Image (cartoon, one colour):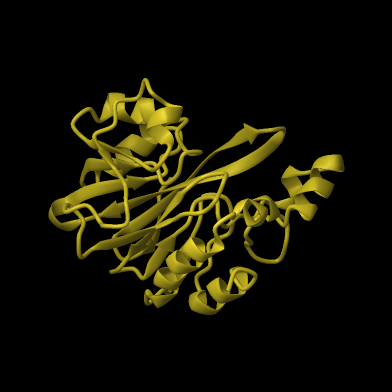
Length: 228
């Protein structure tokens, strides 16, 4: 269920989620902080097996929604881990007013993970403001929807044609065309990307796509070359 992705970070693939007629594969990450405290990034559906596996690594203390589009499974995680803090990215409190969030995510890391995880808001996009994280000990940068790659076998007919046009199908993950068009303030986006490129990245993880585990910095420069 959980696969080790690097030092103190594990990933799990969840069920596909249907959005606008497309089936998206889902992925979450579990990061172990000091004191065996666990941070859950972009949680997928919580099963009993997943729960048992996660709790063997530590105590769930932080549940993070990295953008306003990733919120489907937050309530069930909060019910099970009532003592954990639930963090909202920009825009999600308004979108899900019935979810009780404990804190908001910004450009400054929370004091509970300062020195272990860095983060930056990628602003200027009409679709969503994404929080990109960097887990220092594993050298992993975590994207959510700004980088995507849908497996071709999940698509057929007009969906396959639309996905190709949107740059969601290709030899490596890419920034979907709809997100590129939605960047109305590229200056702010470039400022955030500069911070990302300054991190000593070794791996790139995303919610929808094949993780990149070699030449990560070069990959990021290719993926965002249209922006720079």
